Amino acid sequence: MTPAVTIDELYLEIKMIQETVVRREDLEALLDTIEILSNPETIEQRFRRAKKISLPDERNILNRRPPR
Image 1 (cartoon, rainbow, N blue to C red):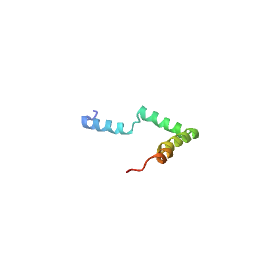
Image 2 (image 1 turned 90 degrees about the vertical axis):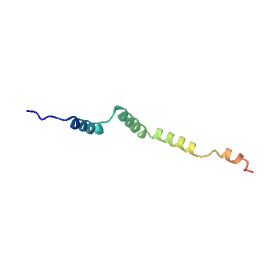
Image 3 (image 1 turned 30 degrees about the horizontal axis):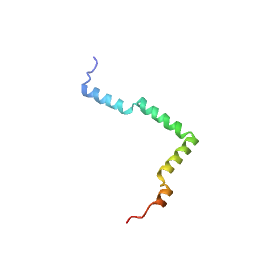
Image 4 (image 1 turned 180 degrees about the horizontal axis):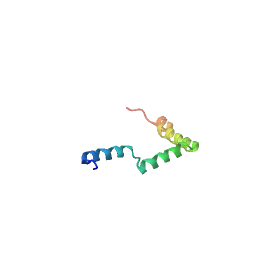
């Protein structure tokens, strides 16, 4: 005779499976990231964009009037 399985045991087993399964969306995002990181030109472009965004525009700083 096969031992009975409780609903709680089944629930715990499903939770364990969910924790180890990779969703398709997560896998696609990982593959996109790997593709970006493996292309030196893309990395250089992203670095330049990030640097440009984070640095203040010198012209705006020089043309500002001091506060009164």
